[in-house]
Amino acid sequence: MTALLTTANWSSSAWMKDLRTADPHRKFVLQGVDDYTADEVRYALTWKPPEGLLASLPNLEVIFNLGAGVDAVLSDPTLPDSIPIVRLVDDNLTERMGEWVLLQVLTHHRQSLTYLAQQAKAQWRERDQPIASEVRVGFLGYGVLAQHCEKLVRATGFETHAWSRSPKSADIPLYVGDEGLPEFLAKTDILVVLLPLTPDTREIINTKLMSGLAQDGTLGGPFLINAGRGGLQNEADILTALNNGTLKGVSLDVFETEPLPADSPLWSAPNLIITPHCSAVSDPRTVSHYVVNQMAAFERGEPLQNIVDRNRGY
Ligand code: NDP
Ligand code: OXD
Image 1 (cartoon, rainbow, N blue to C red):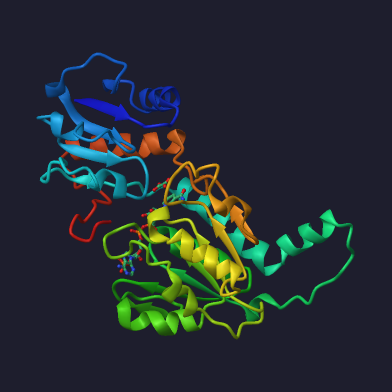
Image 2 (image 1 turned 30 degrees about the vertical axis):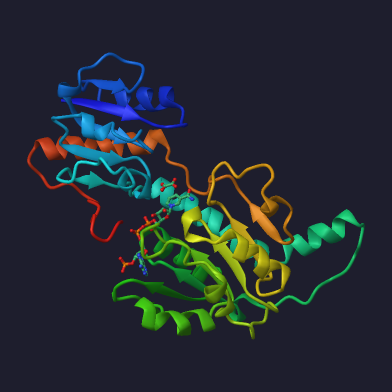
């Protein structure tokens, strides 16, 4: 059963090689390069598929989204509504996100931007350093990625808590829904955003939310870290918050427009770290096995794993 690969700006040759190595018996075809007929395609392996592509495949049975976030695939107005969408859950991706989030938390906690600025001026000046257990790190979203990141941050000594859409058992304080948000924010010194982009979460990072963060913390003001999606944030509000002191520092891996335009004022904003949507990149070496194993299980009549709930949007 043929699997069609479409990877937007990723290196498709590496993906084709790893997929064919993971399952030498299956026919994999690359959209826009290989010859295939629309009728033969049973699986679409996609990252940001071109609008209309999935609707043009009459015998499509499963859509495998090659990333964890499915906002791009769900934004196609022609998306066939009866086909299951499987999203990516991959230990390698999760661990990479853990590294990035811990790095950003420690960077702000240990005042690295201040020390780098001092270094540029050959300035030897020790700053007061709060201890990690006095700093409260709050996770907006508490799914696969945030749960892993939270454990790492907690193991490093920080106090942690989280916010999610629905209640669940957790061994940290968990705040739920609109009612839980104000209290969650009021106890947060470093906010880590790992939400999916849905109609409910679009631009959730705005002036109102940032103003609700703790102002009484030992770091002297709150910090924001977003690796979820750029559409979660209002960038003008973030700039205002940095400039008027509502936020002390920010790390962003995702942006309203990607690549971030060269003339974006974010590039020169104070105390802002920018990374180019690279906190947790899908690696074909591990993701190929995830997809190949799921296709084989599906053909044995077993249930697919990590199916997207289209009503929730993630
Ligand atoms: P999950 O689906 O496992 O977790 C999503 C979490 O967000 C859940 O805790 C969910 O709540 C919560 N949530 C969703 N909607 C709401 C809402 N309206 N109010 C409150 N909480 C909400 O996703 P992952 O952890 O795997 O991934 C999260 C996101 O990270 C992805 O969607 C993607 O956008 C982004 N990502 C970014 C990467 C990068 O390189 N920058 C790489 C990979 C992912 P509940 O638990 O109640 O369902
Ligand atoms: C993802 C991403 O969603 O890389 O996996 O952004």
